[in-house]
Amino acid sequence: MRNPQGDPIKGTICAVMLFVILPFFPWLYVSPVNWLFGAQLFEFPPWPAIIIDVLIYAPLMYRLAKKWLEVMTRRKSGPAAGIDTVEPGMGYPEPGDEWGLATRPYAPQKKTAITGSKSEIRDSPYDLDDGFFLKTPDIDTGEEVFDLEKLRRRAMIRSKVSSGGWINKSTRSRATGSLKASDAMKHGRPVRSRIPSREITNIHIPSTVIAAAARSGIERELPIAIKKEDVRESVFTGRTPLTIMLVIDVSLSMKGSIEQVREFIERLEAETRGSKDRTGIIAFKDSGAVEVQAPTTNWNKLYRALGRLKISGLTPLADALKKAMETIRRERMRNEDIEALVILISDFSPNIPLAQSVGPGHAQFTPVQDLVRAARTLKKQKVQLACVNVDLEQRRWSSFLKRPYHDALELAALLRGRKEGYKDPIETILAVDEFRRTFGAYLIARAAGGRAYLSRELMAEGSIIGAILSQSRSKSRLRTQDLKEVEAYLPA
Image (cartoon, rainbow, N blue to C red; front, side):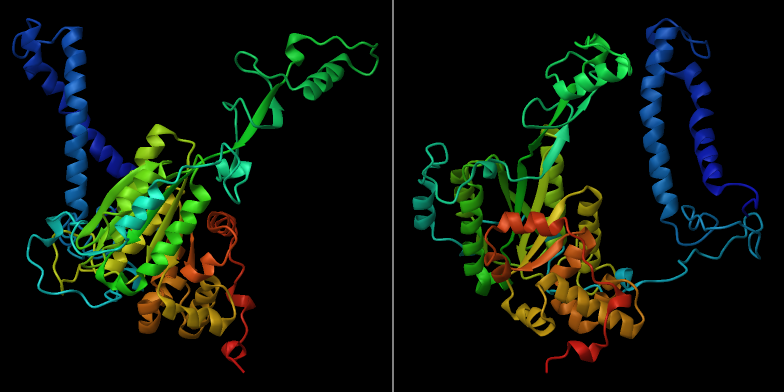
């Protein structure tokens, strides 16, 4: 039973605090650490022993409390069922809320299709052994993606940016990320001024003169005396380098689309080689994803990594996004100011989930459900995502609705959602069979706050990176209340 005037969150916190704090006092008297300082059993220890006792006790109890909460929140029945659930509004006693008699398990008020049973896009694979999810994908096994001799010749090309001989290169392409202002930056374009907090490095003269004039008042004589408190410092802005993660699908379903992958990567090299932008490669197939090359500016290394890729196996898309996020977190530890961009190249037909303990046909075998969760992690960490679809059959949506690929799919989802009564485009896609099997790229992009592209559509742009960066910052203007009737979008 919950107190109508109490806060269930505070109650849970108090319970955990009592669980952690009360055993601390017996620990002070019986800790083996006290013996090292000459204190006997059940004798109050000296201060050095108390400090060491706290350093040992705090992380130990933190792990115990965390594990206890994890176990209790997973319970589906009994008095502790739904211990992590806080319902909105005031709580009042109901039948079964008597002490020790709460047997009704918690159930969400409304189940959505995002966590429902329709979570697969393709049929689950069969004949997988028990250790399938524990194996590291074998990148070196299968049919070759790239011509090794051609890669070797391209890897010998030296960048000519410094000599001015590189075609279609501009100075700003040396760092193609977005403009960011930083108080720590000491170069670039001054955008504003501030009062110095440390040693003065660059004086912003206009702001300094204005501050001195404002201090002198209306009745002032020339020249104006500038004092130390009038000095203002410049704040600069510069173009931050990109960290591009190329996440490449090398599963068996990509065999017919690999030429598009080759062309796309060659275009990307032409735009980033010789710049400060760092590029890394993650390949995924079989049971998971592997980082083939850590982010680097050296395209010779990248071509050696691409030479290892071979096609075979299944499509673990969720693990690919998870591996990309791990690499970006590591890069942000090295430089927190980087701008991360994940370019996912696939035909978007996942059939392998993240879970390592389930098999085909199991209720938890939900690759798309894991995919939506992984995509939302990218959005939460403010990572831009571009989903590049190499499945040429997807062109019919953009040609049918007379819009770019991402906008066409969003329009189709909104139209079907209005017709079927759904409010969320992702929920609409997972509920409609035809959409679920063809909207994979849009599904991931929508969940991650990014955009979906057809490979041919993106290749037609003057700059792939420029198009992705500009379009990722623009929000879709399609709204349900502005939609016409479905018949208005049908071809004449």
